[in-house]
Length: 127
Image (cartoon, rainbow, N blue to C red; front, side):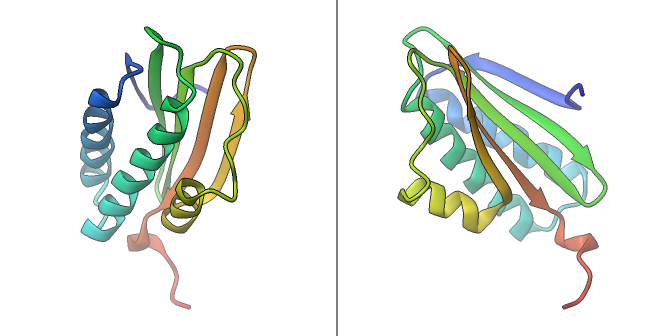
């Protein structure tokens, strides 16, 4: 499945703000509430932090956005030497799990990826 939008940048912390702004812009265009947009921005920050901790010097970081009427799935990945799954008991994972749903991690031979879904509360059903 191809992403609806994708951003590729150098795997450096200075570029996290660009991914946060891209995510917020997409969410705003999809009529996410301000709270949903802020949750998405925070989730992107945490995912970036986790993948950048393992990023290869001079490597690439990317964010892929898969859009649906009631949610957005985001996959943040980076090139990595000897990648390992992030600590699911760590603070960053806990923040990500609080701001997003369906959080998961995957590692390949030279890539680390964090996937998460942020629902749109505009389409949430009442509890």
